[in-house]
Amino acid sequence: MDHQFQLPGSYKKWTYGLIGAGVIALVWGLIMYHPFEHAGHGEHADSTRFWAVLLQNSVFFLLVVNAAMFFICVTTMAMGGWVIAFRRVSEAISSVVPILGILTFVILMAIVFGGRTDIYHWLDTDAVAKDHILTGKSGFLNIKFYTIWSALTIFLWWFLGKKMRSLSLQSDKEGHMDYETGKKWIWKNTVWASLYTIVFTLTVASTIPWLWLMSIDAHWYSTMYSWYTFASTFVSGVSLIALFVIYLKNRNELPYVTEEHLHDLGKFMFAFSVFWTYLWFSQYMLIWYSNQPEETKYFIERIGTATKAGPYKAIFFLNLIINFLCPLLILMKKGTKRNWTMVTFMAVLIIFGHWLDFFQMVMPGTVHGHYHLMPFEFGIACLFIGLIMWGTGNYLSKHSLLAKNHPFLKESMIHHT
Amino acid sequence: MAGGIKKFVVGTFDDEKVLFPAVKNVRKAGYKIHDVYTPFPVHGLDHAMGLRETSLHTAGFIYAITGTTTALTFISWVFTKDWPLDIGGKPNFALPAWIPITFELTVLFSAVGMVLTFCYLCNLAPFVKKHHFHPRATDDLFVMAIECTGKTNDAEVQSFLKNAGAQEVNVQEVETGWWIGTYDKEQKLYKEEKGY
Image (cartoon, each protein chain N blue to C red):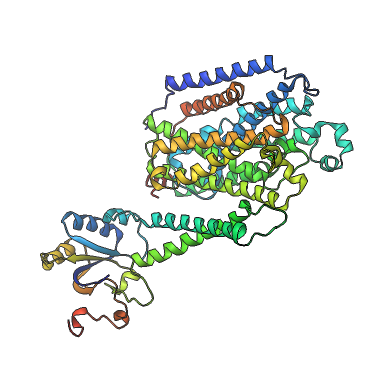
C-alpha cells in the first residue's frame, strides 16, 4: 500500500510527443500565420485563425481541468463517500489549473492588449462609441474589467483548489483520524469546498463564459450561455477523470476502484450529456421560436437559413449527434456503464465532441466562414492535452494514489450501486 | 395466471447479520427460497438471493420509444396533413416546437407503463389481497419463506432454519398467483372452494 506510482515510459513518451507536436504546431502558426499582424484588410486572415484556435483550446481545456476540482467540491459538500477511492485522480487533474490558467491568461491578454478587434469586436473603441448596444455593455465589456476579473478568477481557482488539495495531502501525514478529528477535518473540507463553489458560480457558471467566449459575438447574448459552457466542460471533466481512472486501473493501481465506481462515473457522463442537451435545446428553441433578428443572427452564422446553408451546418449537427445521441443511446444501458472499454471509448468521444462544440462557439464570430480543421487546430489541442498529461502525471507520481486516512474511505471501498 | 396451493416453511430473523449467512446456507443446501420479506430495502440481498436482474428497464425503454413515436407521428400528421396552420410564419413541419411534447409523452409512456408492469410483475392491485407470511415483516422482522415441493421434508427444513439462526419457524399453506375477488376475505384456500 505504501508503494509510489511511477509513470511508465510509454506515458512519458506520449506526454512529450504530444507537447512536441503542439509546440511544432505553435511555431508553425507563429511563422506562417503572422499572428502579430492585423487581420483588418483580409491580408493576414490567418492571424485571426491563430488567436481563435488558441482561445478555443486554452479556455476549453482550462475549464475542463477546473471541472475536476468542481467535481471534488460538490461531492465533498454532498458528503459523497464513493469518490474517495479515486479522489486523488481528480485532484491530480485539477493541479493542472495553474499551468493552463497562466497560459490562458497570457493568451487572453495578448488578444486584449494586442487590440485583436477581429476576435473581440468590443475592443474597437471607435465602433463602440458609435454603437449604442456596445456602449450600453461597455461597463462590463472593457479592458480593465476583463483583465482584473480574469486574473482574479484564475487566481481564486488556483488558490482554493490548492487549499482543497493540501487538505487532502495533509491527511496522509497525520495518520488515522478518530471520530472527532475526522469530523473536524470533514467540516474544514466542506467550508473550503463551499467557498470554491461560490467562486465557481460567480465565474464559470456566469461571468467567465460571458467575458471570454460570448463577448466574441458582442451584440448577441443568451442567458443559457454560461450554463451551457459549464455543462460542456463538466461532462468533459468527468470523462477525463474516468479516462485517468481506467488508465491507472489498467496499470494495477487504485485497488479499491471497482465496476461500481465506473458505473457511477458513467452515470455522470450520461446525466450531464443529457443536461448539456437540455441547455442546447433551450437556447436553440427559444431563439428559433421568438425569431428576433438580433438573436437568430448567432444561429444563422452557424447553420444558415432555410434557403442557404451556413458554413458550420455539418459541425453543428455532428456536435448534437456526438454529444447527445451517442451518450444517450450508448450509455443508457447498465452494461455499457460497467464496461471499461465502452466507457473509455465514450469518454474520448465526449471530450472530442465538446472540443468541437467549443470550436463552433468560437470560430463563427472570429474567422467566419473560413474555418479549418487542419493539423494546426489538432496540433494546438495536442499541446494542451500533453500539458494536462504532464501536470497530472507529475501529481500522480509524487503523491499516494489513495487518500488512505479519509474518514469515508470505507464507504468508498464497499460502494455498491 | 392461475395459482395453486403451495406449502412454505417460514422462518423469521431479527438481524441482517444473521439473515445474510442464512440465505447463503439455505441456497447452498439446495432449498428454494420463495422470497425474503424485509421491513426496509436491504442492500445486496437481491445478489445474495441470486435474483435475476429485472427486465423492467428494458420494458421502460420500449414504452419510452413508443411514446416518442406516438408524439412525433401524431403531431406531424396533424400539423402537416390533417390541419396545417400557419403559426408565426413557421414551417408546418416545426420540429423544435414539438420536442417538449415529444419529451413529455416519452416520459409519460415510460413512467405509466413501468408502474403498470411493476404492479403486474409483483401481483399488486387494489383488489388483490396478499398473504402475509408474518405480520411483523412490515415492522421489525426479516421473514424468509422457503417453498416446499413434493419431495421436501419440511421437518428437516424447519430444523435447518432453526440452526441457521431463525427465531420462529412454522409451516404455512398458501395460495399463489392472481385470484381476483377471492382474496377479499381473510385467507380462504382454493381447496375450500365448492367443487374443488
